[in-house]
Image (cartoon, rainbow, N blue to C red; front, top):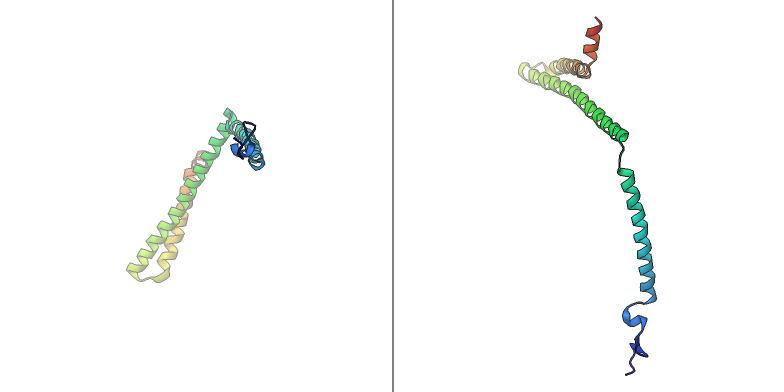
Length: 128
């Protein structure tokens, strides 16, 4: 019973699939698993926000929402005025003048809306 896969009734490392390359790969995989576990544990700790950090994150999100609202108010005023001016130019054949005048009026209306939304107008009227 002497064949290449058995030596003295025992299987060799090669017959079980444990070549030196596979042993090195297994060690590397174990090391990678340990490093990933450490990183994952660190991320869980880093993402747990305390009460103060959550308040700060909510304040930043709220400030971003306010900024987007104010900028959309301004852009809407300008685009609305330009659209009205273009319409009047097409109807009355007053080439660029309607677009220019109504774009300026739209810009003015947009700035007033931004000031009103930001509360600047209310503060100024309280002073008077």
